[in-house]
Image 1 (cartoon, rainbow, N blue to C red):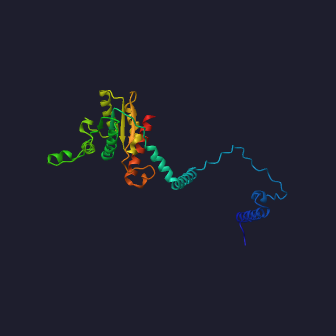
Image 2 (cartoon, one colour):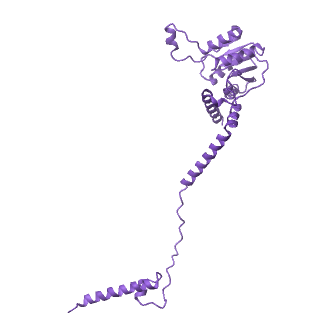
Image 3 (cartoon, rainbow, N blue to C red):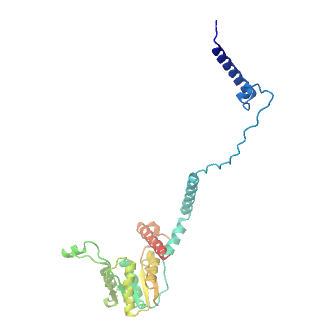
Amino acid sequence: MKVSLPNLKRKRGENEKDAASLLAEWIGPGVSKEQAGNGDLEGKREPDFVDNRPIEPDAVRSKGPAIAKWIIFILFIGYVVISYYHVPILTALGDYLIVEHPVKKADLIVCTPGSPLEQSLMAADLYKRGLSPRIFIPEEVPPDGLNVLKERGGHYPEASELFSTTLKSLSVPGSACTVGQLPVDSIQEAAAEVRKLVMSKGYTSMIIVTPPYSARSTYLIFKKVFDGEKLEMMISPSRYTNFKADNWWKRNKYLKEVIFECQKLLYYTIKGL
């Protein structure tokens, strides 16, 4: 049988490559197939290639998972602390909101918007003790629909009317009460209205009656409105209330009020900065 020369060379080359591969595997991974095929069995290998390029730093690992773990850990610790110490923490918050000054004789007793009954009781006590001959009653913004009610012959007691009626029933004469001339919708507006009265009458001192949870914010607002004036201000929170520093969080009504007061204090603090 005749075998062509090209086919013979090709088979010989394939046999040599197979032998070289087997020899390389037997010698070890450190020897290349070319060395095994050339019969370099005496350990004479060329030196390995040295890469002199600068080593690039490894890619920065993402810090997202680590930060998330720390946030979860901090939240867990905060939850444990608040759960265990919530009573003293919330009591301290209630004490912080309540500002009360020693009261003495003043030119004017000032009632603030909201809570007519409990403020009227406190204002009447101060009046009967002879601490002031005058009581200021805020004229609040009327509720929606009041005009329609009046047109239909109905009657709805406004806040100033509730103040006046309650004080009169507590033996405070109407001549001792001064109702604001402009409707107000906030402590800020009420303080501005009181400032006009105080400046026009030349008063130098006043006692401010307020619900206990809004005592601090009321004091800060009045202090800001009367900034630069020589006026003595005394805060007298109403004692005729169920708001107590050591249990206020047990009633939803006071929860809402405290949250609102904290928001106001935060706003005034940021605004002051």
